[in-house]
Image (cartoon, rainbow, N blue to C red):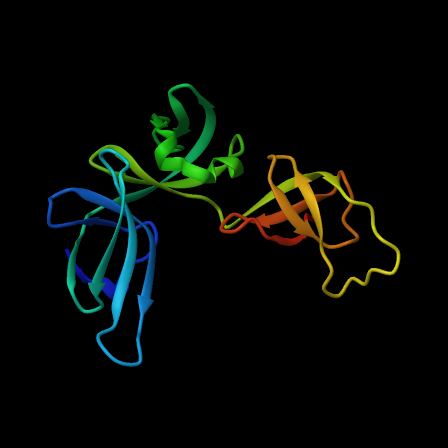
Length: 189
């Protein structure tokens, strides 16, 4: 199916002139004051993981590959990769670390994700927008700090670091955005 370059987003799968499939890692539409608007995309070739950057005019037609998005449950990771199970058929699928990438820090046992499947092979992974993690370590509150716009660094249970409000202490469970690792709120559980 041919689509305009303007409509492509992160996670879409396209087939370029070389006949190979690529996953869109990022897409930015640039509208200069003068000249032709363009779409700048960072792509990863599915077959071997090679990353490339391309630029198309926004109205240029690009072949979008047919991909099935299916819900899966994360089970575990080992030397083979990350293992997911289809909750409807109970089929298990091993996904290589290249496809999961830096999102692996958010994966938790039993987490529901969306896997993009093309011809029986997983080519992309979509995590839930938010995950709940525990604060393992954080700095003590400095007297006189206001809660308005001051944040302090904290280490989370998955090893990541995030900025949290001063009232958050070690042992507190918080909700974090998977897109950028930013603090959202205190967990309600």
